[in-house]
Length: 416
Image (cartoon, rainbow, N blue to C red):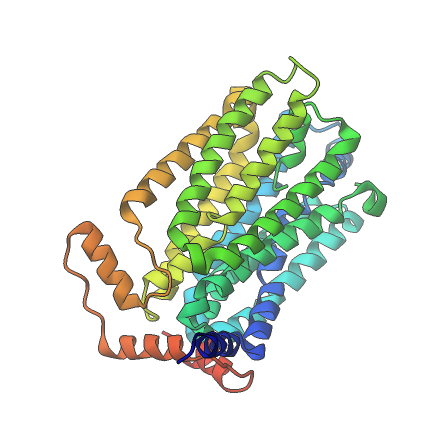
């Protein structure tokens, strides 16, 4: 076969894998799932002063005196971190719901949680009850927990193995787009009011208050571009380099950020160097650690094991989110500018662990991945059940799911 004919055949094969119905299924699923998760991560950031004023006013009407500052800090921390507790509950619900409904229907039914949460939060101010806002955040977390487990499983099972990584990054890309949208709607020109505590970090870096919303918005743009970049190169570079490199770069920039925050009064340009470090941390995170774990969890386990695997991974993820959301203000208060060294240490530990333990999973079947783990750990590979192997092979060879048959098969009929 001539080289031109070979290239033409490869192009046609690639186009066939990226079928229209496959792309639409991924985009629509991500828009109704991971987009909402990202949006609710960042949307609470900009209106922080107004929410605290609402809490203070409600407390005054109930008790006849202003709220104690420590109590207000605790209430605000709970408001932020309760989202992660809801996510944990949602993660634990996925296996049970998926058993009866399947992947696709689980994603559809999950929208009910999002609608209920939106109504509660929208009506809290008129009702004069801040508990409604907190409960709404909790229910929205349940929506996010279900979405971030069911969506990656669904995408993994409808994707040919050759594009499994790129399609899996749709989850991370739409999280970033959601974060960016939440930041955009928080601009003063739009509503008069980055994740969790970005504004306070920029304030600590010495950035003028009126400039913070625009700098925060830039973080959303950077993470979206980084996630898209990762999706474009993941099938060329592989999962391992992006994940290890992302953790390594995060550790480097966390250390640099600590230095710039410590020396921010030494020169007028130092606070802007802090901004560069924050943007670099976010870009490093979104290019690897932000999205690849969703892909790896689907690749490491057979289809019958995936719900349990995502439940365990999601539990760790949401408990970590809760801990950071609840404890970060107190860690920042105690360690001041050195608080980011805690995260740098965690990143170094993660990069080291993955360097010695994680094999490359790019373009490999479950059996090949199991053999790679066994070889790296000098152990016997686990037995792969015949029916599971056939199911995996069928999922990997399927390239043109259609909305009425194949998607229902992967999303609904193939359940544990």
